[in-house]
Image (cartoon, rainbow, N blue to C red; front, side, top):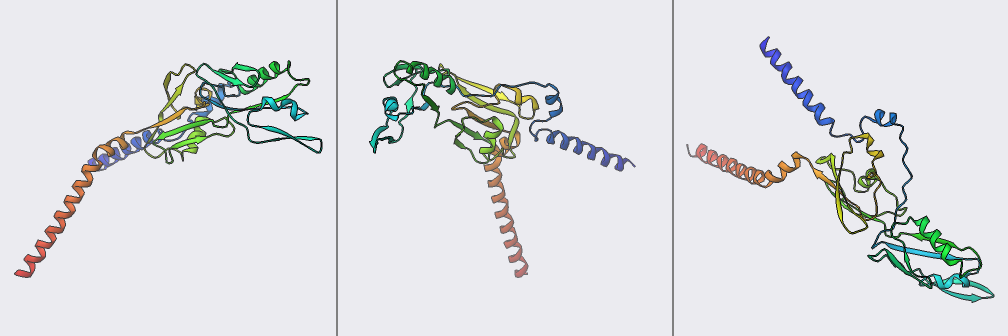
Length: 264
């Protein structure tokens, strides 16, 4: 009877351990509570920061009228039809948050969204154009980096300039079995060049309401390893050495036993 109770107790302990381990695995747990908050989140729109790369196009019904505002493009007239040629050059946002725009000169774009930047340029072009132009601002090199305990670490370019933390992990092939879902680091640089490190718990469903959930240009996501990976890293080399030594001793022992058996 005592042996039976011991077995039951051991099974119960193993069950509790397994449950605790499982709770560390799924993302966005307790989603019912997160839904009950009924919290709205604003649609994210990337803001322009120093060192960002921008492409800016100005279009009018007469291409020759807007040609001077498009870097790298020239206008040719064939059969009374004006066409633009060449690819657009890019603008590098300086440390002071400005770009040097043709004719308009220095423009402060830091902290503006793409739409805000487009409206600002439209307003400044009123003096030079007879019609309201179509202005398009894009970030062709919106990049994030995913490192640590993921299956495919690397740097990724986001074409639509919008990505959240879970989508970033998906780009990195998801976490490995050694990644800590409750301790994901986000490294972000502000407009002054200062880097900040934040910690996110992706097992908490309310993470979707966190301002950090949507990533920004040049964010670095680092998935920290769990204790199992740390122990493996510390003991992996020595364990391999011990296994190799034991294998050699076993082989040597077998050889000696064979020699002794045949010499009797």
